[in-house]
Length: 460
Ligand SMILES: *Cc1c(COP(=O)(O)O)cnc(C)c1O
Image (cartoon, helix red, strand yellow):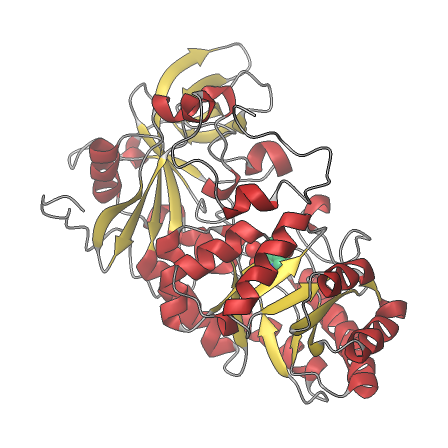
């Protein structure tokens, strides 16, 4: 933080404790002043809202361990916030484990989920385990267990099972029934027995149903999923008798559309509890999106407005490289212009069908098509809702557009949490030997000394 006084934003949005925060609940004047001070595109993450989301979930699942899935938003301030609230962290890569450790997580608060793990990731996490022997590794294949054994790992092991059922908002995120993820249910007991006989400390069974469980039908699917996982965990427990926890993954949905109802947490908690009631094991849940999605907005400025016979095309300065979900999943994100000043009111603008596009040379670079929105004008700042989850995490520098800055709001005060990338950042890695040379990670990615695919040292 610079020595300027923090911008007072006590009312960045209406009450942080509401069950759902819609885009219209954010305060126009506060967001506009953040856009003016820090530029656009700009991610804003309200940590007070993250805390409120955590507490609501924790109240619905009072006995559960809440293991935050870092891939939804791995910003250090966010990780520190959920750690302070009591969360553990679910990490899906060496980089996420590195971030969790840097945010102050001790090993007992780290679950590393190995999904087709690169060799360097396993080596990094096994390294970390020698200092933090209480961390837990989740393996989703017998082969991963073998590779861990070869690296000398015999610590806390959790097995990811493929329960054969899934749920979620889009085919690409319904992982529960996808063969990529987890050990087939009919092999899990034998993999568990063999792991125990090789000295692993088998502590958990894990499954992740996919993302975005929201409506009654999806809650029903969640119930069937939990019942199935419970049956599988019961078999594993009978065989190895050491299960500490059953982890039913994440996937708690948020309403992206203005007229979607919020998730009925009580119904989900009830379905989960009932399914697992016969098991003497702790429940672990892995929310990502639920904790951060509605705590974040993306601010972007209108560059250009073009009338066409079909619709009005509005070009903004954020694109698919900033927020990839619309291009990737055809995902809906609410969009609205911020009032220009205290005297103006967006609601007085005419509603017209508008297509909002980014600045990337790709036809997929579209946030919405012919959507009825208050008429947008050049230089308007627009807010894009539910950008706290899978926003910055999926951002890239495609088209050589430097990634945006992130601001956090904490106890009502805003501060910069991650600076905007500069043009110099775009070429920094190409100019001779990068600053600081190589690190442990660089070494690990080179594989063994005999590996002929080894990347030569600069100057070698
Ligand atoms: C992505 C993921 C999560 C979080 O999913 P959300 O839909 O964001 O809650 C949890 N666990 C695992 C293993 C994941 O891959």
